[in-house]
Length: 282
Ligand code: TA6
Image 1 (cartoon, rainbow, N blue to C red):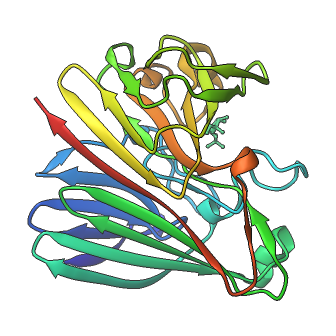
Image 2 (image 1 turned 90 degrees about the horizontal axis):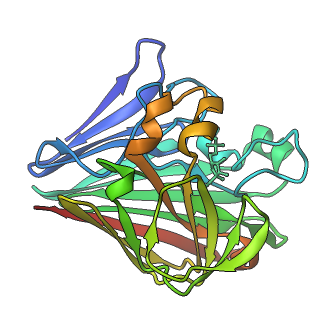
């Protein structure tokens, strides 16, 4: 079942429910900001100060960074691209059976997007809501010239206590440390006890986030770069839509195509980046 809803300020979202799961997806950014399996809010973190307002990114859930990741070389252009602050069209919600709902949303170029990025495109987002959560973003070049993109599914995972969390799948990977602006090598599995902002190059496409009472599984497709981010206790103070203590309960693990993993898309061709998320609790 799909219901069209709005916040009191008119900000639109859809609520999707089936017998095993439910989700809330903002039409701005095709942004899934809540996903519940068996009635429990499990995998995605959403800031208690998240704002649902036109032209503002939502802090939490899965923001889609597209057609560029991070800051643009032209500083007046929006950080992480314009998809996350653009209104998508709702295409369909297919109930595959009683336990899977597949939502499709689309963004195409407009006079407004052409001011920011002068290309014709189609960005198709598919979100499958079931016992697992699957998100894919398909970029099609509808222009007559090639374009280059960087992109990410900037997934905010909900963790009970960041100090108890461990990430498996990046051991021995090279990464670009965004804090020191140097390349480094990850020696061991990743335990986070300070600010982290890294872009891993060619990590395993299957990652595991282990906590005391739960394990989250991530599987990335068509992604050879991965971002891991937590602002920690100092930087969080500069993030106005996040409370100071909230860094303890989130970790961004982002399926990406960034740095040398950027993608050139030829006219009439498409590329797809996708992520499958699941979990088991003990
Ligand atoms: O993905 C990590 C990152 O690029 C960090 O550098 C940090 O700034 C974060 O994204 C959040 O960006 P935002 O624009 O959503 O505040």
